[in-house]
Length: 196
Image (cartoon, rainbow, N blue to C red; front, top):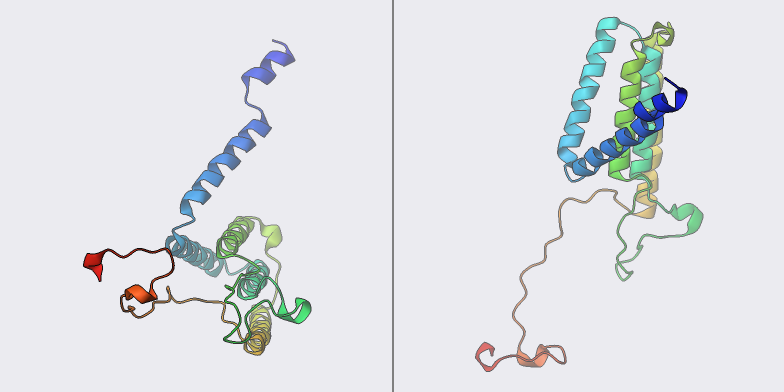
């Protein structure tokens, strides 16, 4: 048996990798419209991770790194794509300005997917004792909450200063308008005699 016959009969690593990436992308594309279920799945996975860390009584530095990383993702999710302080106001500042939708620096799907990958990496890291660095966890927890408070305070001040809200609560509904009379119709629109 020569080397050329084994290379053609056995699937190559690059072909397997490409097949895996294609299948993964297919399932990611299918999950895109199901935001609620994606986030519930992530919360369930975070709960499993938290239970594992609780029972192992370790890996606090991995958990701290996950917290900092997810805080950074959250800031990207809450920030506009164009920073008004650096590039001028991209958001409407007066009611007479043209409506421009809020465009995030980090879209929701990428936020979810990055957070999911991070927690998967953290979960796998809990199986390797090299990542169980002995630390005094209350200091890490306190420091995380101080960072959370300071960064969120700064983000909220930025939101108030530039008057934007990074969330929308449903579609804006307008009151039902009265039917138009023939003299109010746009040019070129013909109204049948029975509609008048």
